[in-house]
Each structure stands twice: as structure tokens, then as C-alpha cells.
Image (cartoon, rainbow, N blue to C red; front, side):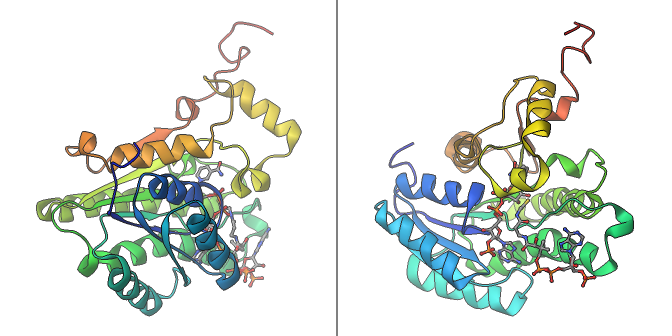
Length: 261
Ligand code: COA
Ligand code: NAP
């Protein structure tokens, strides 16, 4: 896709590491001007420098997605530097494994505030700064949105809300030519998310249970974000795109399929 996004402004929230930083790199390599945002001044400065070292035009902004006024200022600054936002990815998230009885009200609220309210804040604060018509908005959700999981009551509730924010905004903002979709990654290798959720023993079990029998890569998610933001996807809105090796289908282990071994 080299050059396809030349001169476009791609804004990625939650992009100091992992999947979202990879998305920023992919768009940067395709010629986009990139803005990356996350809480940590130090981490986001390093991420922006890494993008510039790779040849991209990149701006790093430190801001917490729970801070609405901070986001308004962030969009104003980003647009002053790079012009209206053509592609907006909202992927800031927090997660940890904890049974409900060890999840305090504040722990639950914290994940809801980062993942769900944060996604709403990022999208809502972007409105005045989007390319209209034409902008592509992408939320990064997760399988937890539709599959209840033990020890993740906070993330399940938050990501279920993210799916609905995606669909409701797709309805309301479609007439202005703004498409809103979400990507639901499966287990992705070499990410903080999977480091928190699976040790090596559990990792082997997860791989056996997936139809495609392996973790995905950060590049798999970046490619999907580029597809959703390309002219090829101009009639796609309100979609939750699973990029998950079949995770959404359920357990595909040989045992579960009745194939033995
Ligand atoms: N088990 C149970 N509760 C936990 C917890 C855990 N492992 N980790 C944090 N909490 C609770 C805290 O105890 C606190 O609740 P309390 O006030 O009742 O004690 C609450 O969550 C907020 O914690 P705090 O550390 O103040 O939140 P934060 O805003 O600084 O950080 C987190 C947010 C907790 C989600 C943190 O893990 C984070 O920054 N994550 C980002 C990276 C990440 O999760 N990546 C994977 C993305 S899928
Ligand atoms: P990650 O590297 O920890 O990325 C999370 C990012 O969010 C970091 O850049 C973090 O940077 C930022 N962030 C966290 N809280 C923030 C806040 N309050 N305000 C602003 N930025 C904040 O995790 P990842 O595993 O790559 O996950 C990325 C996304 O993919 C998440 O939405 C996650 O739910 C989703 N996902 C991941 C997997 C997986 O296999 N890893 C599977 C399904 C879905 P700072 O610390 O600098 O703020």
C-alpha cells in the first residue's frame, strides 16, 4: 500500500506501543503524516521519534484519553500541524486478569473509563477536526466484547460498549461521509495484552484452540486498518471486523471438533 496514504493525516490514540504503534508505522510507511497519542510523555516522545527515524512525518502528544479537554487541545494541535484528520484509530486500553470479587468498583471504572469512555472521548472530540466527507474512524475492540470471559468482567463490559459506540456513530455520522468501523484482533504475538493474559502454557492451549492454530501478528491488524481506510472499503461502515484466526468461532481444537489427539 506504499504511497496510498501519501499526505493523509492519520491520528492514532493509545499508540506508544504494541498494535496501535504498529498501525502508526504502517500508515507512516505508506506516506501518511502521523499523530500518535498516549499518557506517558516519555513513551510517546520515543514512539514519535521511532516513526521519524523510519522516515515518517510524526507528531507525539501526551494526553490521557480520560481527559476530554486535553483531547480537544490535542486535536487542535495535531490539525494545526498536519491538517484535518483522514484516519482516526482509537485503541487505548487497559486490562488485567482479576476475578470480580477482587475487582474493586474503582478497578472496574478505570477500565471502563480508558476503553469505553476513552473511545467515545477520542471520537467525539475529533468531530470538528475530521475530513468530511471521507474520514475513516476505527476503534480497536476485542473478542471480550461478545464472548464473556472469567476474570475480565471490566474488559468485557468495556469492549461491548466500544462495539456499540462504533455502530451508533456509524449510523449518526454516515450521512456526513464519515465511516466508523472496529477491528477485533484475536491473540496477537509480542504484545502487552497477551503478556498480561497468557503464560507460555496457556499460550500453547490457545493456539491449539484457534482454527488457524497460531497467534496473529501486529502487522495483520495494521493491514486491516489500512484496508478499512482505503477506497476499497468505501461502502463499509458499522462493521466489527474480526482479525482473529477464527477466535470468534469458538474452540477449534482437535478434541473440541471430535477429531481426537
Ligand atoms: N487486579 C485487580 N485490581 C487492579 C489490578 C489488578 N491486577 N491492577 C489495577 N487494579 C486496580 C487498582 O487497585 C485500582 O483500584 P483501587 O483504587 O480500588 O485500589 C484501580 O485498578 C486503578 O488502578 P491504577 O493503577 O490507579 O490505574 P491506572 O489508571 O494508573 O492504570 C491500568 C490503568 C490498571 C489498566 C494499568 O494496568 C494500565 O495502565 N494498563 C495499560 C497497559 C495495558 O493494560 N495494556 C494491555 C491492553 S489490552
Ligand atoms: P499496549 O501495547 O499496552 O497498548 C496500549 C496503549 O494504550 C499504550 O500505548 C498505552 O500507552 C496507551 N494507553 C493506556 N491507557 C491510556 C490512557 N488512559 N490514555 C491514553 N493512552 C493510554 O497493548 P496492546 O496489546 O498492543 O493492545 C492494543 C489494543 O488492542 C487495545 O485496545 C487492546 O484491547 C486491543 N487488543 C489486543 C489484543 C492482543 O492480543 N494484544 C487482542 C485483542 C484486542 P501509555 O502507557 O503511554 O499511555
